[in-house]
Image (cartoon, rainbow, N blue to C red; front, side, top):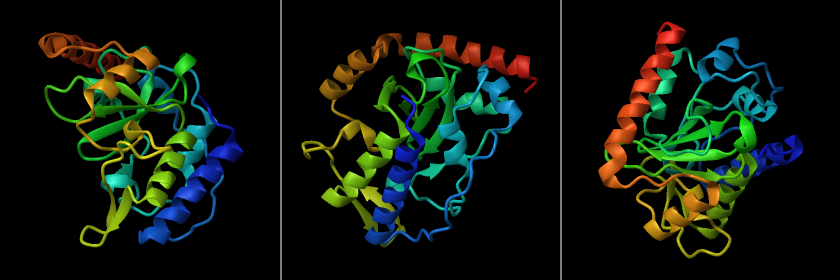
Length: 230
């Protein structure tokens, strides 16, 4: 789902305000106009357009710091086909694996922005590590994701850690109004994970089949990178 731009801008602003009130060092640099995405992005991810919502978010002048929950950071526009390597665990998605851009990194989780089709604008999450086949939607849109994080701060689920100088996430399970899958925490409850996978159209992969699926995906990534010359 692509957000109304006004709604997205307000959701990001409210998150920054809540994060700074919690203790995060994030000066207000004002809003920047959306710049055009690099031409290479369409070629890398095999799409004919890039949503204004993504271009706007990537154009904002954020400090070079871990501004997202659990020390996450916004990833820059990709330089080349190596960006596809991040998608090696996006198994069983209901959209072409290549048509998503790695956007937020949390050390142990990757969040992507779906670039095309009926799932355009959705945010999906993948564990960074081996033997984890947990492709699932984290949020239906960017604005919803930032709103969840803002609500998490208000509920005390997301708090500032003085030692690390970033926001950390406590257990969001059972907190009214909060979706645990929106928060960069792993592992997640399997019942919730499988229910969300069914809801969002993901094809669950059992452990016994995971390696076979991943080998095919890695082969497809290598083939795609070869066409890009990287």
